[in-house]
Length: 256
Ligand SMILES: Nc1ncnc2c1ncn2[C@@H]1O[C@H](COP(=O)(O)OP(=O)(O)OP(=O)(O)O)[C@@H](O)[C@H]1O
Ligand SMILES: [Mg+2]
Image 1 (cartoon, rainbow, N blue to C red):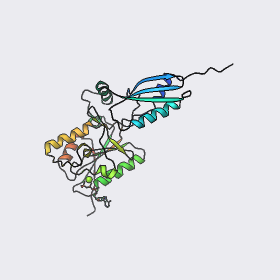
Image 2: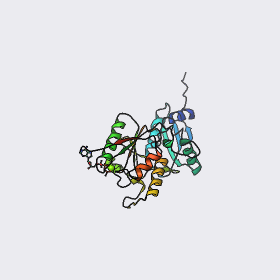
Image 3: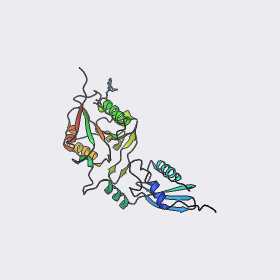
Image 4: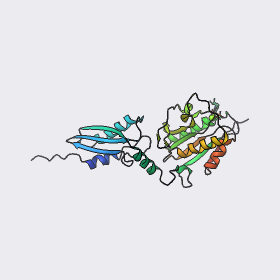
């Protein structure tokens, strides 16, 4: 008697794909409706998946993790991945799923948010705020916490430099996805402006920029969010205190 060879099923492939996370959104690609089609012929599996935006910098990572997960299934000899791009409607549906509620507001601004917000401030400049912010975030990440940094120092963005991260964040339908470095999610207003562009902020414009910035970034399941402030008690500090009344404050001083 011959043992009957049972091929892999679409259900099994879909189940395996639940373990593939979108590298930016940290959610399963199945849950995010990014899997469009699965086709199986003998031992060959083809997965058609949809990226949120074209030119996604992490497309190779997604392809590799899909291949790795599906290859683990018995009876799979070959895996091909085709990547397409979501339509505007699909993107809006995804943002709606990540940000339920009529305003699509960041949960960070809601009183029920589970993210602990720590604002790093000082009375004067150059005392080590950005250094403390960076090191604290990395230390938290190394202890297994999901840590993030929002660089709100609109006068001198030093976080990207200190963490060694540069580039433009992905924006999905006005939702800004933080970049990542050393396991720390990071967003800087410096990512939003041109490197050589001198920015002169005026009060009301600055308030708008800071609140928009805080409201539009997708922090997801971030546990500790550190906000690096410019020195002093200026407009940015006031805007942040108004926007995030639950925030705790860490004051950096020098022993003089
Ligand atoms: N504990 C420390 N001991 C000695 N030097 C430090 C310490 N922490 C930071 N520095 C140095 O002090 C300088 C200012 O640090 P940093 O940029 O972190 O300060 P800041 O408060 O963020 O400044 P700014 O007000 O300009 O944003 C840097 O050159 C940094 O390397
Ligand atoms: Mg600083």
